[in-house]
Length: 447
Image (cartoon, rainbow, N blue to C red; front, side, top):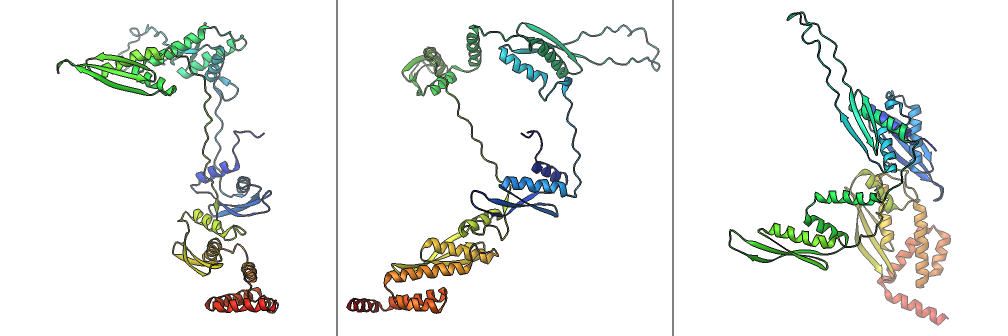
């Protein structure tokens, strides 16, 4: 397994770009291969230099092209900072205080640090070295030393250092050396009581009304405060407030609404604390959002074989422009042979497409827009014409239109001419509906 602290090639490329105040840009050029074994081609632009590489995933291709850029780039690389020396030669990156906190938690004994102020040095030479205003004898000041007292359970340790943090580390190192080999003490039943006392200390900082709402929220109980009585002269009013928490209720009286509300909450809080404790419920794991991909799908060759509608939408997203706008212009033809005309608008560019249904018309419009924007077609135009002609032949054969003439024309011309010929026949039949009935009668008489 690789060292997690080791920087990846992409991270090093970002540092190199930041050092030269340039922006690296990754572009997905193409993807090839079957769905279970795809290969992605990525291009990295760093200033005026570009590199290309492939990988079985977009991330692997990005890492490969970043490694290639690091080895072949002519840009001067930033100087790597040496790692910081560990305090007190502590192995690993964990400081002694952090390591001691973990050990103290296992032992159930808190680690408490108390700073100790050193005693001031007596100034014996203050009155014996006076040599006049301009001929004084100065002494080098003594460096200040900090002292710390560390208490872990019943054990006490002292540390010293040039700074208060260094003194804490020194005391923690002494505590670790003394406590690492000692057995962990068994937890006494008083720990639960101490935990309750700590909770009580936390609750002491909260008002009674807040505690009532907290308990009611945990137990899914409704809370309501209501002033039920108001008496006395204007300068000496008395208020009675009733609080209802689920099945519990209490009343409180005071010379203000706030005081009566607080006293009512205090009374009902004593009843709520008698309830049995709630079962412990594990918190659900947090789901973090995925980071946005740092890849731009660009290039006229990218996306060949994809759906033109999806391809056009991805191109607009890469350009950070508005998505394509599709509008149905017209619908014509017989009920069983409809032809739809769809228009797509991208910026100031407009293209249209036709098809036997809205889906194909939308797809053809997107394909026309891609060609208009300078991108290569997803499939060849001849394949599309062949498919359109074959579908038209199938529809006309089902409708009983002159299949013999269609077969003769299939031998004489291309599929494109067949489709055009059959469309003309259909338009003529639509204009003269009587001819279809006559053909049907002739076919029946022949049978």
